[in-house]
Image (cartoon, rainbow, N blue to C red; front, side, top):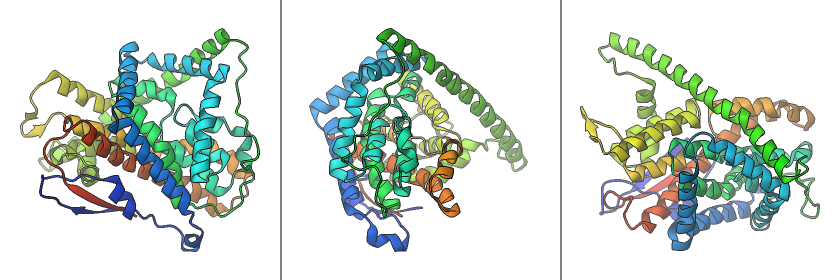
Amino acid sequence: MQLYFPLISGRGTYLESPPAIYYGIQCNIVKFELILNLIVLPVIWGVAMQFVLGLITLRTKVGFDAFNWLGNQVDQFIPVLPIIIFFSTVMSVLYHVGFMQWLIKKVGWIMQITLQTSPVESLVAAGNIFSESPLMVKPYLPYVTKSELHAIMTAGFATIAGSVLGAYISFGVSASHLLTASVMSAPAALAIAKLFWPETEKPQINAQQDTKMEKGEARNLLEAASQGASAAIPLVANIAVNLIAFLALLAFFNAVLSWLGNMFDYPQLSFEIICSYLFMPFSFMMGVDWEDSFIVGGLLGYKTFFNEFVAYEHLANLIKLRKKGGEMYINGMKQYLSIRSETIATYALCGFANFGSVGMVLGALYRWFRILTFSPSERGNVPMSAPRSGSDVQSSTSKDGFWHCDRFWNGSCRNGSLHMGLILAC
């Protein structure tokens, strides 16, 4: 549950969320017996690193130009769904030569030193920027503590893997913003995870032990590239099937709701309208323009109750409508978003925290729960609290990312003056 307390300045009509003030008063309720054991250092450093990464990538010319150039190159290279195959092939080659292992270890080492987190959870948080990192530390999973497992799951819910990054880009979503959101969410995931579930045990895998990452079975570059391309086939099929299934299910829900609404002389009733009213306050508090918060609320509903593929597919359609330059309002209803609201929505949707992902994670980790010394209550508490933590990370990243880009672009994504929003997340 999140409670928002706005402070209105005299320069405009909507709220903004400055991370410095937001993080200064953010408080997540933890178990009373764990409050004394709360580790402040990971929280402070995680928040600081998220802010600094956003500062470098969005508010400095060099950082912004680098990510913008990288995003433009990816946008123009392969603009359709097969980009997933390209991503998978390149990542497989980079893993074969050992570059990705080296990069992930270096990023993980920085997080481990600054946040004082364990090697396993640091590697997972760093690796989630590029791929499905829990597979990298699979040999160590039976030995992780409850707090480490919670951090691993939170990082998974709060970030997106490099493989599906190509899918979102192929929809037409900004590659530079997706890359930035994924990078910024890595340290924030550890910070929020430790705030929800502090470490009270002694990790079995310590800094002195050399955590090894699996390299793969390919014998040469060509075989690695071939394996990467083949590995992308199930992912492409999964994305296509999920989109078809969920969009069909959404159409069915809308037809039923329209039929029910027609009984009350409101045939426009739909799943999107319900979600828009439900999530409208949250989207507004993220910094979305008031006139756009209704649409963004619907996107948050798609992401929460279906998955991020459906949400990004709808966001891509809104982006295309804006680029076509059609009528902004039809019968009093806004047809597309401003660039500012598109940016915030891109950050807010960037993660796997939804009900469908909870079920998949529970199924995948069930055998690990039988190995780990978890009590019956903890078997439910650990996986069920991770999506909440992941959602908090996405929310904070959207506020942090917009706060940086809104100033760096000198008003290019700004529609008016600024307000200050103080957010208390409980």
